[in-house]
Image 1 (cartoon, protein in one colour):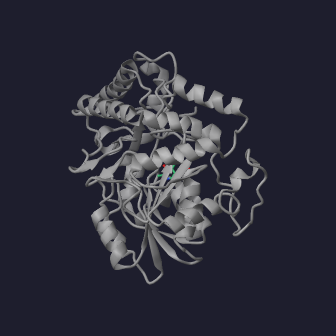
Image 2 (cartoon, rainbow, N blue to C red):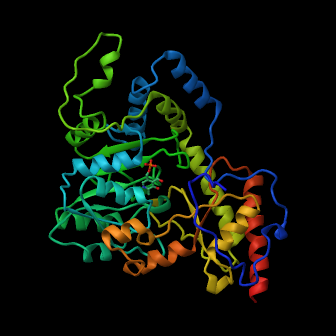
Length: 418
Ligand SMILES: Cc1ncc(COP(=O)(O)O)c(C=O)c1O
C-alpha cells in the first residue's frame, strides 16, 4: 500500500517477538479511511491561483515563477532565488556551479534521500560519506574532517528533519580547507541556526517543494546562492543553457531570439507549480506552528514508551519540524521495525522510513563499494527508524488516531515481550 512517499521496504515477519498473527487481529479502533503519510494542506487560495494561471493561458515558466522567487527570497532575506522543478535539480546545478569536476570528492551524509548522492554523481563528482551524530542524525563535523583528502572540493550537509547541522563547525572546516558548502535544505525551509536562515549559511542552499514537504508545489525546488554570478549561471543551466530570460521569448512584447551559451538541462519550474507555492508560502508560519504542536503532543504521549523519540531542538536554533522519527529497537521492544510499519498500516495509518542508510542500497554498494559497517550509526538508525505523520493537514482526531495506534501496538508488543 502506498504511504504517499514512494515504495516501502519488504515487511518483517516477526510480530512483537511472538508468532506472526494476522494484523487485523489487532482491530483496535481502526480508522475507516487511510491516513496518508505526508499529505499536504491545500486550501481554496491555491485552487483559485491555479485556476487563474489556467485562465491566463501562460502555464509554463513566467510571471508567477518570478513572483514565487521574489517571495521566497524575501522570506529568506536574500535578494535573489532561482526556482527549479525539484531540489534534485537544485542540488545538481549547485554542484556544477560550485565547479565540481569529474573525480572531485564531495562529503555528504548516509542519512538522506538518494537524490543527495545521485546529484553529486550526475555532476561527475564522487560522494564520500561521513558518519552522523546518533542523537541529531546530522553529520558529525569530526567525522567530516576525517574524510577530507586532497581531492575533496565540497561539503554537502543535510539538515535532517529540519534540525540545523552544526554549521559553525562545518563552515569552519569548509573555510580551512577551501571547500564549497552546499546545504541540502529539502527538510529545512523554516530552519534557523543562531539567527541565520538555512540555505544562507553556505555557498548554496537547495530547497524542495515535493508533495510531502513543508510547503509544496507538487514537484518543485529553489536555489539560493551567496554569489549572484553563480545564481545567474544556475538560471541559464536550468533552462537548456539558453541566455538570460529566454522564457520571455513568447511574451507580449514580441518574439526574442535566444542564444545557447552552455549545454543545460530542462529543470525549469512552471507557473502552474509556482501558483501553489505562492499561496503556500503565505501560510508557512501557521503550518509550522501546527506541526510543532503535533510534535509536542507526540512527545508527551510517547514519553513512557520504550522507543527513542527525536531529540529536542538545540537552543538558539529553529527546527523546521519536517519529520517526527521514532526508533523501534527490537531488543528493547521485542518487535522489528518492519513489523511495526506493518501494524501501523493495518491500523490505516501511513508511515515512512527516513532513511535506510545510503550504504544499504545495491547501486551504491556495487558502484562505490559502500558497506553498512562504514557508518554504523546510520546503518543502525536506518534499520530502526519510523516516521509518523506530521503534516499540518492532520486534525486533532488524526493525531489521536496515530497516538492510539502507536500505544496500542506498543501495549501488545511489550506485554508479549515481557
Ligand atoms: C534530504 C533530501 N534531499 C533531496 C531531496 C530531493 O528533493 P526533490 O524531490 O524535490 O527532488 C529530498 C526529497 O525527498 C530529500 O528529502
